[in-house]
Length: 353
Ligand code: NAD
Image (cartoon, rainbow, N blue to C red):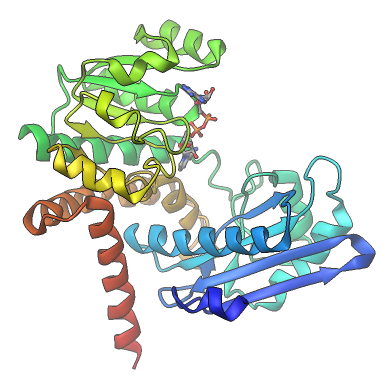
């Protein structure tokens, strides 16, 4: 079963880690280490079955390969899952044991935070391995990734505007921002400086309040955001918000936001093209946080915000390349992004032969 699942996307290595004494059941998936160490966070989740855990870790690690490749990083894609309830079953002994397994991979897998795993948990893992990044608050840490993510989204939005409206300037453009959380808060600052007109929404009234007080934006109810007459729709809250039901309601020419997995299915990518709209692929435009953490890797000489943000700014160029190729070849932008990532990996593989 496992080889059958690994073959189609050519996964390199899947490691099952088990220690009953500490209640550890974990799976580490290294999808690709062609471009560099397979990097990706550790998720702790109470999966219904082991098969679900395996499917999830494979899917997530493959996504990391593409994200790192399109971010121009010397990193491959990996991910780990711990099976269990992160609220009741997580213990220091379990996390340390997991750290030992990570260490045995000799740096070919680098871990970080994900759902259910926080900074304190990573500190436990780090007692046993140095191949851990992104412990906010620790010396040398790159800190909260949201500002870097927002900077990248802003670059990608400008490139999308160039493709759609012929200018990178967002001045006077109306932007419907779905979600006013961490990334959006920093993005709002850039949008205010660019003199864009923002209409926002959030299910959390505290977030709405914060955005209105600081930036004076217009607010609509969460479900109304899809009907806002705007130039750019920015999904920055949750996944699958662009789906068969919402897409016909979106009146924007551009879709560009921070959320992961914005398109419910690949069909939406084709429908976006058919409608003459432009979509900045989510994993490319939101790669700023990953780029930020890349510069925390001791292999790069220690964290530098300047170098990290300079690299993040290149997301704009990458989005432009994707959109140009998408138009020239008449292929949805997210498929173009995948192809470009595959080409980068293949080129590196060949250069090693
Ligand atoms: P966040 O949790 O701080 O903000 C998300 C906001 O969306 C919250 O305020 C939440 O109340 C709101 N929300 C949830 N459901 C909503 C709905 N139906 N309608 C309107 N608002 C809703 O998260 P974040 O760190 O700002 O990240 C935003 C998105 O970007 C997430 O999808 C995240 O996975 C993705 N992302 C974040 C980063 C990062 O650096 N933080 C990096 C890459 C991708």
